[in-house]
Length: 195
Image (tube, rainbow, N blue to C red):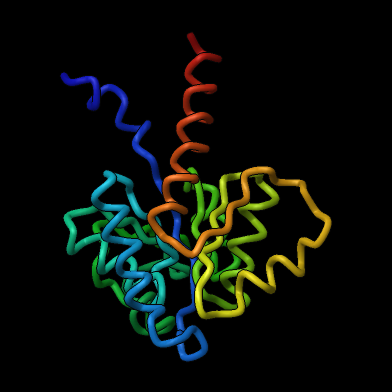
């Protein structure tokens, strides 16, 4: 048994939230998402997603094409419901957890299962994932880009410093580096508590 086998739970899991419909995200949004996923795979990060189209799907595509692992959280109770009622994809997923809790419950499980969250271009569902991560004081990275999401979040949080683990960056690689540092510190602190 290797050290990894004994401590596989220590692998970093980062959730990616973003718009399912990317029409307002700008022309490069999907390529940025794909590059983010590729970088996650190269760093050995497990990507978590809310199993939707658009930004998260392209991030999952990049992650899988680079040899990474992607776990999706579905609002549906079964694959049949996932495909036929919610009309959501199953592409680029290693595992889909069918929560049966609709969009709101799915987001709660998705974010709480992640060590950190990246917020890409998005709308109300993306903001829901953001607020869960922010209020839970998880490391949250807001990806700056040719979209409105970062400005709206800054406006929403004006004067609020409740989560010191909030980062903004337009470079996906640098944003991941900041989140990895936060997660590594948190995991080290937990290890010391149980030694």
